[in-house]
Image (tube, rainbow, N blue to C red):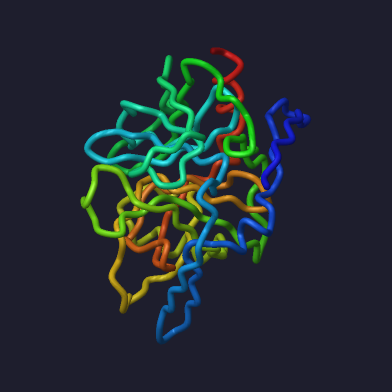
Length: 264
């Protein structure tokens, strides 16, 4: 069971504990990657399972993932459309459950230097119309204040469609554990991109996938050592299967995030 432990750090930001190992063990998808193949193992989860800090931003034409970083604030990607509905405590977005909380937003603030073409500074803050009720199913996650350390594994989560567009909302929560590329390797990869090259965390490798790629909800979250370190800005597809994903580094924007929360 995930229990919210709300406490203030030195920066005043809310901190949250790491997801307990028990929940990570009961994964929906367990990926064993090798050079030759990818095996997928499905494991049954409890019906009321959630990743507490994940927020489902229901929007058109595509939904996005958000991170609850404060009872009244959600952090997501600036390239995401504005949500028509905000849902917390969600496991299967295509099926509503009694444990969910629904919110509207009262304010959105994109980073002032966001560039829609390069996706530089791809962050947006969303203020909820009223604070979330923190419980076993809904909780906050602390933002990173420092970069990831070498050889640190990150927990990347989103929602996917089993059969793309079989419903307006995705079917299931999906995740993978990945090691970010080193700064030098990431720099070399980014030189081949026409996208942002600053404050980007590179995850995964170019893969020739032998399994069907499931469609993934935008703005996946990367949690490293119990803190939010990245929000997916763009990918090459199939990042929950180990393919390339490019995340905005959250620690570089911690001051901006705190300033927005204090100002509004």
